[in-house]
Amino acid sequence: MPLIDFIMIAGGGGGGKGGSGGGAGGLIQNTAYLINPGIYPIVVGSGGGGCNSGGNTTFNNLTAVGGGRGGEGAGGFSGGSGGGGRGALWGSNAGGAGTSGPPRQGYDGGWGGGGSGWWQGGSGGGAGGNGINGGGDGSGKNGGPGITDSTFGLGGICGGGTASNDTNSGGNTGYGGGYGSGGNAYNYGGGGAGSVAQHSCGGSGFRGAVVIRAKTKDVLAHNAVSTTISGDYTFYRYTNVGTFSIQFKADNKIAVSYMSDLYTL
Image (cartoon, rainbow, N blue to C red; front, side, top):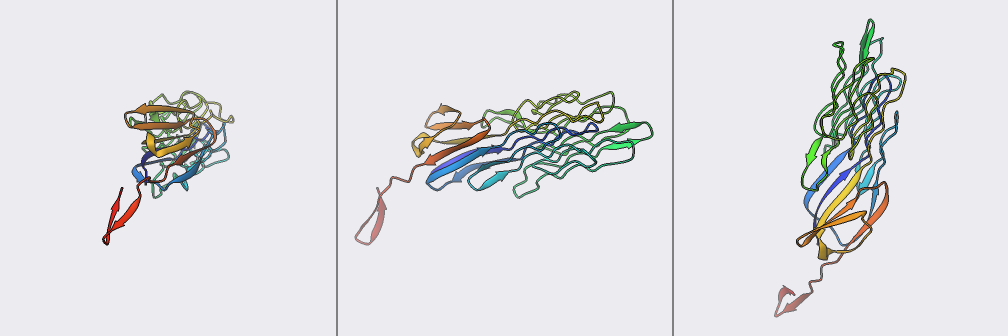
């Protein structure tokens, strides 16, 4: 059977209201994975617009769950990583739960807070850690950390969206999540940032992706968006939203028997 490495990323969630950040899209990675010959559909999920969760990404009967959107009425929404809770003057709102697995795909969003004369959203969870809780210190909150991918060349991915209050917003941490007031995510699986406008939805999450590394000889057909050849291997990159496929060859070895012993040619 062919031996492959792959990464799956779901679409990031959009920022919610009350400054809440969107959760990162779910992340699944596997190396040295034996896969049966055949045709495998691939679906790449979209990033969620403001106040919308991200789309799922699927391959090989696995589902990377779209990032949860930031809170609208109160708490953040669950997803691959959870969206942050809405900041409001009347108290705390929980962040959404990340998908704990197995395998773990992401982490929880931060709580949104509020009190007399102030409110602060919670930031979205990321693939590398929880979002940050909103507090009364007047500062914006950075999104939950993502990861830096070097194996598949995707860079900083799956970061949670930052959270805002009425004057301040979080900064760029390099993992693709949106930052600033209502900023859109800018790399795979990133969550959208919350807005300083309390009753407005935040920025959009970024789309997902699938990248498969396989020996070139083991792949019979594909419709990847792009490919990169590295020695005997090819990286098959599915980096647009949509439905795709890849077909792996059957093992060409022939089993024969000779005097009760089994050999492969």
